[in-house]
Each structure stands twice: as structure tokens, then as C-alpha cells.
Length: 227
Image (cartoon, rainbow, N blue to C red; front, side, top):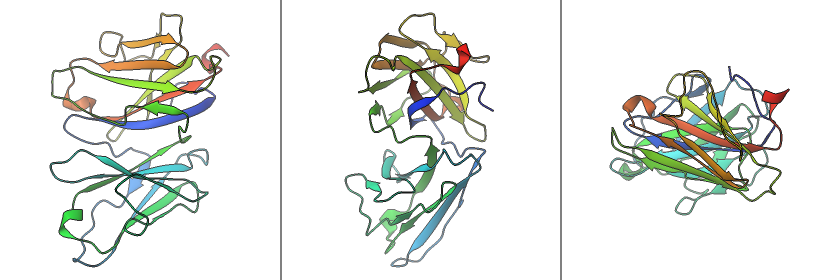
């Protein structure tokens, strides 16, 4: 359970990669697919969140390469494919909020790798965030988030979802510190900055394998923390 939920305007997920990836305790995905060269393989993903989580991302990570976003899907196509990926090769379906699928057509050896789905509340069309970070154990890494809304959207939330765990709020930030950290998270480990309304950042100090996972930023005009 999330301790409290802002009235979101936008939220966008990205991956902090140290040694592993998250699977999400409320997201279920086809765990492993085998197929012959030239055939097609379809991967399914579903979640138990409510219908506000109607947007789904599909990622690909091939051996020795960084993870790449393939396509962003919603229940109202057309879906948004990233450069280098096509609907012909990677057709996606998203008929209802809780389920979705991705197909790899005409499978080839170079398609072998890890495929990953993620779900979110909103597509982040006017929120820009570092999409993928790699770091070595013991080092620090900083994630940036910005938006193009007006200055009334000055409140920013940072969430973490680790493998097999529910999403957790790390910190609630505004342009007037101190920032509000949730139990189990500290400013020493996760220092956050919020110097102006449109931008913010979160740092993970002394990165460890257990810090690998999905991190989210969200912006809003109103905080339920004050209700």
C-alpha cells in the first residue's frame, strides 16, 4: 500500500539498473518464452491495480546492451513506438486497463533477451525523466525529472518499486524544504533537490544491488498529505 497518493497530473517510470530488474508484486508477466527462428512469440502482462493504471510500457534488454523502451501503449491506440522499433515487428495490444501483450514477429537469434512490462497512472507526455541509469555498486547516481506545466505544479513525489515488492513513496518535495521522507528512507541515502517548480532530482547514494528497480517521479498541484 502507498502511504498516501497525490492527485497526479503525470507519472513516469524508469529503471535504475545495478544488477537486476524488478518484476513487481502486482504485475504478472509471461516468465519465459521459447520459439523457433522465423516464428512469432507473444508475451502477456497483467496487473491487479485499478483501472487508472491503464498505460503500459514494454522494454527490451539484449545481452550486452542497455535496456530500451520498445513501445508505450494505452487503451486508445495508436501506440507510441520508439525509434528502431516498428509495429510490424513488435505488434502490441492493450484492450483493457489491466492487461496487455507484446508480440515478436519473425523471431531471430538477435531478438533473444529480456523483455519487461511496466504500468503507470499517466503517460508523462509533459514530464521528462532520465529513462535508464546504469551504475556500479558503491557509486552514486542522480535521476532528473522536469515538466512543462505551469508553476502551480510545484510538488514532486519520488517512488521506488523493488523486485517482488509494492511501490513505495520515498519522498515528497516542494520548492520550500525540508522535504518529507517516508519511514524507511533517509535524506542521507536518497537526497532530493527541488530548486524550482518545473525541475527536481533524486540521488541514490552508495548504490547496492538491492537498490535496483523501478523509480517514478510524479508532479501535482495538491498533496493529500495536507488533507
